[in-house]
Length: 210
Image (cartoon, rainbow, N blue to C red):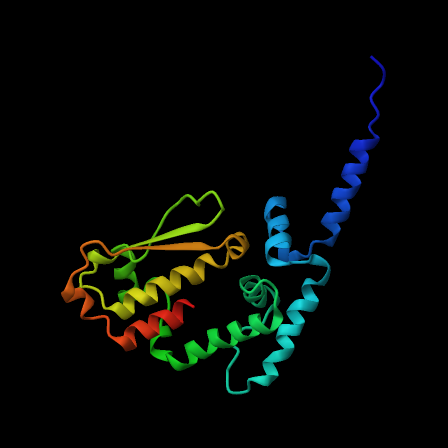
């Protein structure tokens, strides 16, 4: 058997190093499969990542009515990924994010897991978060609506617990790319429980989750 050329291996290694050099610190820790998924499905291009982020940041001046409390690269990147790198759409989502908090200040006071209302809701499984992801890499959140004990948890505290859970989970860049699934089981949800879901409460929830 003749000698085997190592040239193809070196060529492959050289290509891999070239691709690695293109990655910014914002993609550090992502698997090669996830980076490729971001490129194909989200239009994420490491060569222009910082330019994309800066274009969104430059739009902030157009909304002086909103206090943008965080504008670092990693934070803005979340919104670009959520809108497949359409800068205008990503900025609109960023503005909505801070405007929602600005309009609902009470909801975000002591917005931590040790807040009594949030802690109670989390203990009661609002939401439940499965340890394993689905085959697309998405995190799965579960809500069993019939388990809502109105004597223990207000709907606002449940919503705050859900939003906090999403806030923590979205720190993971893999989940920014792969996403989430929120499953709500309405089985045995009573009329008495439903009567607490007023239009204003539902509007608050929908806007917050969006």
